[in-house]
Every structure is written in structure tokens, then in C-alpha cells.
Image 1 (cartoon, one colour):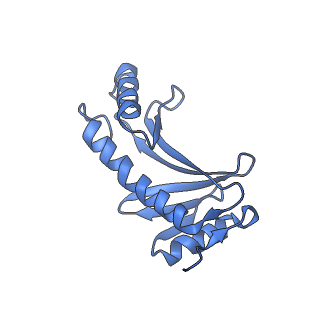
Image 2 (cartoon, one colour; image 1 turned 30 degrees about the horizontal axis):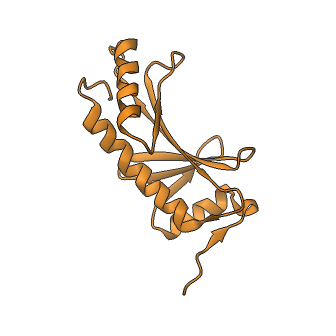
Length: 141
């Protein structure tokens, strides 16, 4: 049986994550905050290492129509969170034109590289499909 490649806690770094995604044929870059940006079929996912919590945060942001009311935005976020279990969706009053989607993967004690890639593939598939199926008012740009 083949042994799975595992990153230890100390090996969870942006350069190591970039190598993993490169081997899986994903285009990546590093953003101005030093986080990994994964480019996949028009979706850019930030992969943020939350060191204190030992979590990997997969996050993407969508623009909302400026004409959407606060009630429409919050209703939309609630519908997404009611229907979609894997990903968390949020909107804030400080950034009313943004919809944030995120997912957390723990890496305490180490994490298999395949799990990181699989989590991203699932995230990149679920988020656009969720928005497409729930955006009845066309508030996502």
C-alpha cells in the first residue's frame, strides 16, 4: 500500500502549499498579504494559514449589486447557509458590496496533501453552484 504524503504542522507554509497545488496542475500566485491564491476556472480562492488555530482557510469573495438592499443581502446569505452545509457564507455592513464564502480545514498534527487538494476542489465546485442555484434575485455580479 502506498503511504499518503502528509505535511507536518511545521511544513504548512505558503511555499509548500504552492508546491502541492502546482503538482496538482493548479495555477497559483501569492497575494499582497502573503497568502496563496489558487486560480481555478475563473474562481480565485485565497488559502490562508491561520497559525494560532492551526486551520487552513479557503476563502473567496464575490461582488454584490450595489442596488441590493441589506434585507436582500442578508436573506440571500441565510438561504445559502441553510442549504449549503460545507461552506459558510457571510456579508457585513462594513462591506455591503461583498459576499464572502469560506471553509476551514484543520491541520493540527499534520494534514494529508490529498485532503488539501480535495478540500479545494470541493470548495471551488460548491461555491459557484450554490450561488448559481440560490441567487434568484441576481444580486451577485
